[in-house]
Length: 85
Image (cartoon, rainbow, N blue to C red; front, side, top):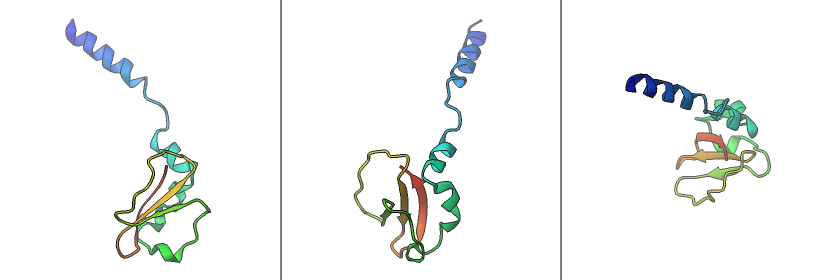
């Protein structure tokens, strides 16, 4: 009986998950379309106004803005991650 209750509770919790998830967030600022740029030099691209270019060790605000594009780079200026936030 307890196992059946547990299974029903877990199934109900699964239904509470929001649809879309990370893919919706990545499309809010266009990061999904820019993923092919990962591994290339950041200097060779023009990004929209308001884009944050984030080299290693850079302090950035933790406020989440789904429409803001963030581009992380390594020490050599190679793009390592592109995401919204």
